[in-house]
Amino acid sequence: MLADATPPVVALDASALMAPVEANVRLFEELDRLLVTYEAVVPAAVVAELDGLQAGNGAEATAASVGADLAGRAATVETEATYADDALVELVADGRVDGVVTNDRPLANRVLEADAPVIGLRGRNTLAITEP
Image (cartoon, rainbow, N blue to C red):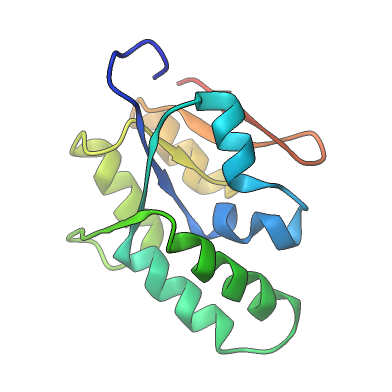
């Protein structure tokens, strides 16, 4: 993921975008530290998931609202899949992204099985790369 000459493309899922509120993670600063240069994308299905979550009340709605704002810093990409996790796996399977940023263990396992790296929470508020 890091050895390519072109910057890696990483897809962000809702759990990653909500991590600044839920886990006190400085998402883009951590990605800058890990990858230096990269292109971030967000599947439209993840944007829709965040929109649904922020319609509620409480901490999850607040985190989703922050996540939706952060999603604006990444390019939105369309997929055939309408379920967010399936959309992220589709992007990996189609070779459209080099890795996925998530704190969702079942999704991380699917991405690793699809032979792509996962960037996720390691420790209290830092991100690390897990290779397949």
